[in-house]
Image (cartoon, rainbow, N blue to C red):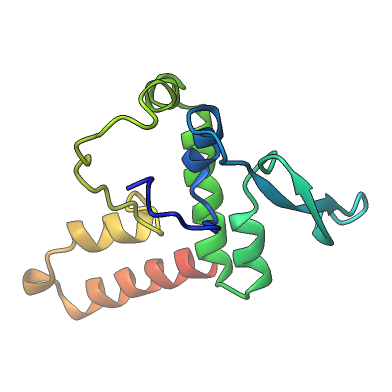
Length: 149
């Protein structure tokens, strides 16, 4: 409900909210200034508040700074790449309907780790009940090789 008389709504990683200022008087966007180190590409917080919405999402950078496992960060980058590559029609549709009551879409669960990786496919295909000890050892050796890169 937009009429709750809240003075501030703070949200991260919910970029659709940045469009509300075009629909409702009294709503405006602020963001924390961020630069990139030209040598390392790392994010640098400038500790300044600026008007407007952020030019891009820094969620993956923050996850990396927070020490999330590299596999999780890399998978997040893959998902972001796929989302950015996809058609922007959904973004346009959402923008047109901001402020209108919406039926919530069915939730989608994205995976952190690719289900198409070779190790999972090998395990799925393995007939463990009919495998000889030597075949099991060879499979384990293959899986270890995949895990070590």
